[in-house]
Amino acid sequence: MTSSLLPVTQTWPDDLAALYKARGYWRGETFPAMLRRIGAQHGDRIAFSEGARQESYRDFAARAQAFGAGLLERGYAPGDRVLIQLGNSIAFFHAAFGLFAAGLVPVYALPAHRRTEIAHLLRKSQAVAMITHDRLDGFDHAGLAAQMLEEIPGLRDAFIVGEAGALTGFDSIAGDPATLPEDPDPQSVAFLQISGGSTGMSKLIPRTHDDYIYSLWASNEICGVTEDSVYGAVLPVAHNFTMSSPGCYGALYAGARVVLFPSPVPDAAFPLIRQEGVTITGLVPPLALLWLDAAEKAGGARTARDLASLKVLLVGGAKFLPESARRVKPVLGCTLQQVFGMAEGLVNYTRLDDDEATITQTQGRPISPDDEVRVLDDAGNPVADGTPGHLLTRGPYTIRGYHDEPAANERSFEDGWYRTGDIVIRHPSGHLTVQGRAGDHINRAGEKISAEEVEDHLVAHPAVLDAVVVSIPDAKLGERIAAFILPKEGQALRAVDIRKFMRSRQVAPFKTPDEIRFVTGFGTTAVGKISRKTLRAELREEVLKAEAAEARKTEEEKI
Ligand code: OOB
Image 1 (cartoon, rainbow, N blue to C red):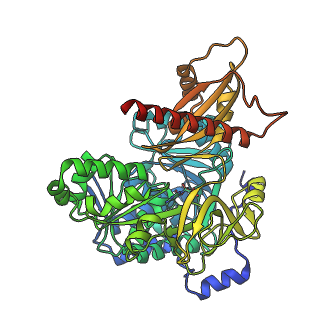
Image 2 (cartoon, rainbow, N blue to C red):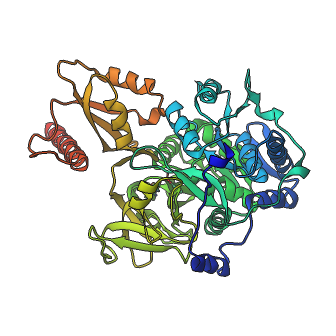
Image 3 (cartoon, rainbow, N blue to C red):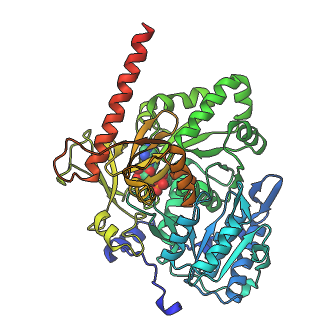
């Protein structure tokens, strides 16, 4: 088994690696070294608050190291990949940093992932073990893990946080930290993050110790995170945004405290901010809107009392409209910091001292002076500032390729430049305003969903001849998923059948179409075979036109 293990690598050209080191971005610190450092430097300070439970840095480091050592005793070896599917809990950090300590490589899945995604990630990463909850949000994760153990060759263990039943308890794994290996090469891969993915299933993103830790401390500087900060982890911690912008890992790097939120809804989140004295947190735009509306409803005095400690609100993952952005300071009383990032690397922030217009109308500028940005037209020529174009980037923490994806790498990387798929405008200050996407994915409340992946599921239905999936602008979600379905001749299908079928496919619930329309044909005006891309664009246009007409009609009726 071990001999067929594909190595995970991520390499920059030698001259650039030397430059990134010389400029002090890559400092040679690794995650196991960081764990030892923060365990010693901040020993008595609280690293985590989860409900009534608190854990000090010393205890965090000790538990993570014991877990890592326990895995080695069980026969695992540095370089082995282990999938983590955990919610916002201290266990997530014990698992991830335990793997780091032992030189094993975490693969981060999202709690919403179901059998289809988990099986894909396990196979693609050649994972030897997985770590998950017994249950979370009503879903039987232990049941899924048991199924995976039967199905996935090479998967040897499922470690369960909670009731393990016939599987192995996460807490039962503990070894002697003295047996932990030497620190890995700082330029080796620390973990595999997953891509939002515009075509097909998520791809694996190998991030190195040097590159990711640079993004942590540099984000801390930009967002003002110090050991006195209290970071509220509201979104899932496995998301790159919550993990590193500056996120939980940034907070841990600085010796700050991480507060794990069980729920993002204002009724639960606002009192927790007050109780824990949260100073900084991050939200996707739909949640930011929910918080804004709730704060307005609760009234100024109540909001001011609940949110008094909150200094910075990061909003990112999807486009935050200027009219919403303008409300943050007056309604929530904190400074808005827009963040436009991607798990592949590049992260842009508006700066805390940027003027109001920049904060509300742009999605920030890159972290690093050595983040290179190109904005190109369709033919690949640079466009002038102020003109929309395709964003390409390379730099000290942007990957040079996905793991084991030759075709996607061919498409997405050119001479080391990552083609982000985003359409942006660059301003003379270097700030970027996101205009949209070139590719066919749906950004549903910050979750990226590949149109192609959903279409593949839909056409698997025995009564479906063809299906086209498009994104539709949505006031609440930013974008919603609309599916146009062409049934096979003589087949009567209802939306409820499709929804049931999507559930039976065992995919993350957020990928189920929000809107299902049945059609009798596609592209009647087109001669011959038209591309799926064109078809998606045409159908989207039709919906937009119909919605605009509907809105006009309503307006006219009012008059
Ligand atoms: C973050 O990471 P991913 O990998 O889930 O998604 C990346 C994509 C970007 O390429 C862009 O299309 C979109 O998400 N995006 C935004 C945005 N932030 C991300 N689009 C418009 N405005 C924004 N502010 O989503 C992510 C990673 C690190 C920090 C923040 C977000």
